[in-house]
Image (cartoon, rainbow, N blue to C red; front, side, top):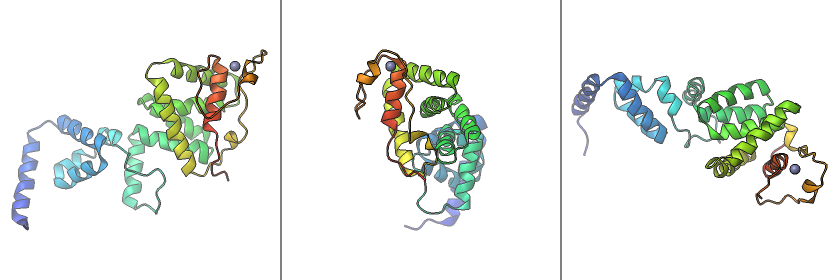
Length: 235
Ligand SMILES: [Zn+2]
């Protein structure tokens, strides 16, 4: 059945006037929830009427939009519209967008300043993967004080209920990005050993692919990097 364009126009008008009576903040909240579950749904909502299209441009909506269906590395060149969309996500401090940018900044572009800026914002917005990458960056910093902070932070993640299991997901997520991108940062090529304890407890250990329960925090860091290191597309 073909729709009568006049009816469509009338319906759009009716939807617009219906939204006129609802506070802007409420519509923005609803749209942000739509955006957080599906990018396709929010784009469909934007196409449905002018008012929704305008309100969906709120920073709050971009902040919460799900990037699950947006590939980290697109297989074909992306359109100007997609570039603008991703830039707006980044400027709106969408945590997943900030996280992805930080991973690319650090491992592929070796831009530490930009990495830290994006990680800080993503962690502030509650992105656990960004917290995990912060640990990794601190561990590789080469600075004794920062390295200790990384060991402590990673140790705390392992000790916190809920985060310990999440940590494995964070590692897998980072691993899958590293397999997709061109890793130019050589830090993973020769990972240093952090546990410098005099007793030979760490030497006895043969790191395997399986995560073990380790009590020494420095050994936790060594194990983590061991689990993360792999054969990536090094330059
Ligand atoms: Zn140790």
